[in-house]
Amino acid sequence: MSDWMNLDQEYIVGCYGRFPAVLVKGQGAKVWDETGKEYLDLGSGIGVNSLGYCDPEWVEAVSSQAARLQHTSNLYYTTPDIALAQKLCTETGYQKAFFCNSGAEANEALLKIARKYSFDKYGKGRHTIITLVNSFHGRTMNTLTATGQEVFHNFFFPFAEGFRYAQPTWEGVQEQLDDSVCGILIEPIQGEGGVCPLDKEFVQKLAKFCEEKDILLLCDEVQTGIGRTGKLLAAEWFDVRPDVVSLAKGLGGGLPIGAVLCNEKTQNVLGPSHHGTTFGGNPVVCAGALVCLGRIADPAFLQQVQEKGERIRSTLSQSPEVEDIAGLGMMLGIRLKTKTAKEVANAALEAGVLVLTAKEKVRLLPPLTITQEELTQALDKLLGVLNG
Ligand SMILES: *Cc1c(COP(=O)(O)O)cnc(C)c1O
Image (cartoon, rainbow, N blue to C red; front, side, top):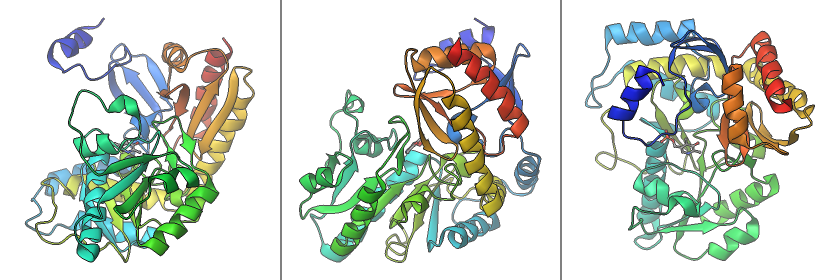
């Protein structure tokens, strides 16, 4: 173990099972550890580094904003967050954005919007949020409660009231419905749950039903959003327009940001004093996010994400170890025949490729800007590991 790993063990709370690599610098899809070993990164910091490491335009925007005005609090207007909100709304067709600092925090805002929308219109008691079995929505008390996996509902009792879990099917949702339901929260592709896309017909039926009953359709796009699936929002693949969308991971390109997008129905639910966060809309973070969005919202860029995703899929499908590959664009989950995902991830690290796991699958979330050459190298190595 290196000195840094020992110090980590001594001084950092042990929440994380880390791979044995101390990463010190990166460029594009490549990253180097303290010994100088090079890795091709197919995880991009769990889908965060959407433009790869140290994209020159992103670095310039972030560093020049840091040198001009780093923070003011939300007591004053600043320009990067307003520009980012405008761009997000015009590109997605939503009405307004709220900024915060993480995926969990975006989902907290989304949940508050759903509850208050219903309270304003129907009064007390219509507060239940239905979430789906196998979902993941974050680590705060409410988002942990919203997470539809029993293994997470431990230790931290009591959990919040007002959540119910439905199997991700039409019948499953019907079983959980009653007059107290104000919102239904979905991930278009369950990421941490093992890269499981929801059924399109189910999502469309749900959207139509929600609209009829004035139940809000809430969409957690923390992992799927901002180009990850080859569309700006993954909801586009399902031809639905949720009432509230949460975003985070890939939006900032490496700096902490969360966002909630509101439609016509939900844009004015939160007013002064109903919600807020000190760091939300931070100028440095938003300057970086603006570069990401500017690049990713281009249809030609999104088309490339789809094409690179197809290339990864068809290349890795050739391995006899691969059972199947699920996902959309560059959000892929590989089910293996004999090896465990953890074994493959460890062997890939040895071979110089960083991959993620999700449940029993190997999960890939490469930087959206990965070059064909970087992809060739990474896929060669990964195939070697799979077939080895
Ligand atoms: C990562 C993730 C979250 C939590 O985001 P944090 O930034 O870690 O709080 C919530 N929902 C989904 C779908 C995620 O993938």
